[in-house]
Image (cartoon, rainbow, N blue to C red; front, side, top):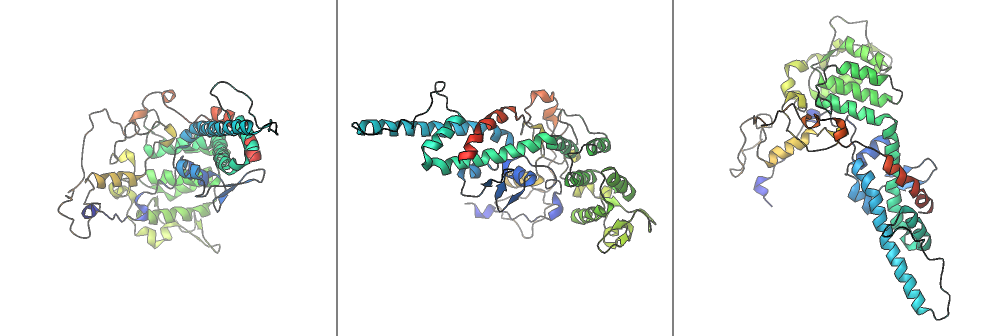
Length: 396
């Protein structure tokens, strides 16, 4: 342990407001974002309850894995599990045959022969009927199948389009590396879809306000109208401005009596009437400080080829900061130390401007090729596996 090199990094809640808004596609985050989970329990449409607690070792292992890897790896895991139990059952049958001298042998405890070295999910279902002592273990696999399938169904119903738009907005580029020049048009197109919920629309509008150098209050009113959202939601953008410490929404001068924001109790005010917001600097004047989390500002780490998924190009700003601490490159002008650092841990005097030898357009440059050259979330193969696992769910 290098205790003399330990660093306690204290951050304001607004240092990265983007990460809580974008859809995260690792298994646990996706489940709690898209599904209704109460006390770590998901209730299926048929009323069956699925536990996602710490007692499930498979959940603990895969919960921080990207959903694309989970949906491709889980069937293989099930086959491995079924194969191991098939061997156990064969051994038990062999012992039973050897020990029974004219006695009863359970001829029902057999497995239909399938392709050589191939054990499928139907085999696992048969095994569970014959080996009830493994029912709890099989239920762990069944639980992950249930929630993974539920997430993928929602993903196919429109969340995939939301994810791509979110990634394009926050990265400033498409998956092919093209600069997003008209985010407003992309927003309006998305609002025409029925699958975009109220929460999804608010998340998109908040992302839009965070990537811009400030928008006017009238502009926000029009965006809310286009998104078919009540203007009382303007209070959320006022709170977001306070969180990041700058005027994301520019108050309209002398706007009393018009474009009013509903608040509790039925009264109406405008941003221009909120003294706490008027004291904040315009985001355009402090963008280098408050928008460092945006890759378009060219202050983020180049993560060339760090992820192959077009739906998951965003990396939380905290990851950059943690890596800079490890590499001893944390900008001491932005993150001032409260006491002198140990001499064994040199202090970085300021920003490290390092030019990449590549033709760097930003963290999305790895997606310049056709999106067909990069993996996307395709649930077709998973659906085939899921059709087979239904019998496990019924008997787990």
